[in-house]
Length: 319
Image 1 (cartoon, rainbow, N blue to C red):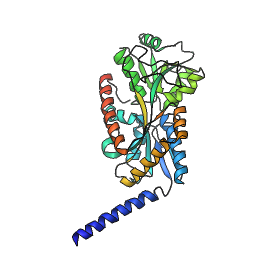
Image 2 (tube, helix red, strand yellow):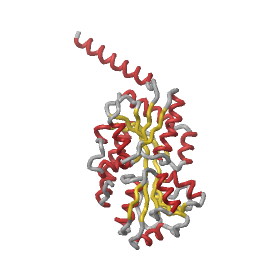
Image 3 (tube, rainbow, N blue to C red):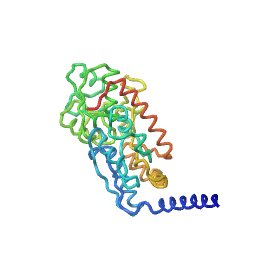
Image 4 (cartoon, helix red, strand yellow):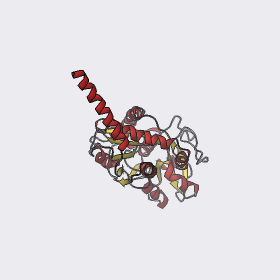
């Protein structure tokens, strides 16, 4: 009798999980982007939200919650109800912050579950057209004067660490970091001459470089990009093996039902194989990634270790 009761309980639980996955979402879903508008997570978050809203027949509301290098919005999601209705769309900064901040306000391993690895893109060094800087080598030479600053989408973002590693560790120059709340404001600073140079994820910079408003100095990928074929890699500029990327991933609070996590992963995977969706990512200079929920967990763990080593080597600190 006990065995029958146990089997009945298991069947009931499985049926309930299936029903929950089938009925999710039954109301509006909130996507929290922990950076200001205009950056990679905002652009991709809104693209995902639009497509998923059409697939679900439910609104997807995108909210920007910038602050503390992405920690403010991430902590908000980590403390939200674990029901799948509050979703974090963030960047590789979340992996950096695990070692950069003594207390980011949440524990990435304990408080959040990686759902989907959406896309990845290299970073790019750009300078204003009126800066007088035409190549990465010229920027490094100018940095040796000791009166050089650069902007990034914020402390703890991979563009920030890419620049710190290049300027301070490899080139051994002393530069001043000026953090902004997202890639958009950082690019504006380059356009206005507020900073000498900025390092951001590629997507926001592409149209500005193509229009001649910014000069692309170098990309941090293994090879040149089809979108910007005239911009050399950092490796071509004299630093072999230099490869850094900004990625965008989706997370939910720990404790979110497995069925809901699986539904989110499955529905995002369906988008990532659609030619039109892939084309829209490519137009933004992003490569789609995808994969199982388990593969996301493995990748994030490896990224935490990678960036922890760079944080230690650069001596980077949360500002």
